[in-house]
Length: 250
Image 1 (cartoon, rainbow, N blue to C red):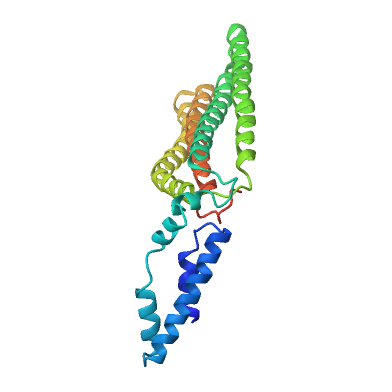
Image 2 (image 1 turned 90 degrees about the horizontal axis):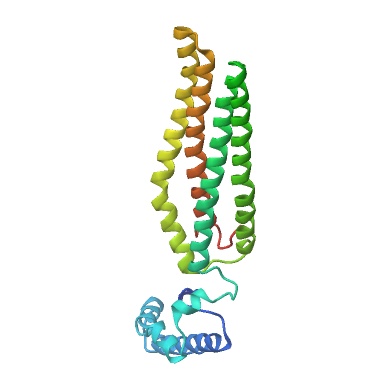
């Protein structure tokens, strides 16, 4: 009998719990148990009786139709505050904007450092280098702070809320589709950061241009960090709504 009950539980797993569905489930279990005992009295073995009862059971979709329920609709509205696909796509768009803003902000900081190394190159160049530095730092802060606040607000709206089945499925697809881009961005970004190091040695040892080598180091490393940060934030955004996150957005 436990087999029949477990079978029914699995069928009703994604059906919204309402008085009607609970009553229908109880009635079905009772009818299936009665039929099971009838088959046993007819001389059927336990396994044969269970197999017959389950094979003669009608489609659960037919039952839901009789109750005027839509199984898919029920899944998506099992929780009134569940995150639907529209909200998820809005969040992913916010994540992409946030990723671009943070990446550009970090790149601006690196370019600011690449320019400020020329501060000792002469009076005019020194002034331009310092101005260049503060302008880029201001741009970086202007990109990161407001977009960070928007991202935090979007995150708070979804935090500790359940996901609909379709949202979890779509999030899993998005995460899987983006894995290749994430790996590529991470690999290229790390590669650029590593390759930026020889720039200082190359220009210093061969040409005695330590300042130019240092400037190129910050520029190339900045591009590498841009790729790492950009792809990592987007990937993490998909992971937050992936169905593997134990049903709740955390």
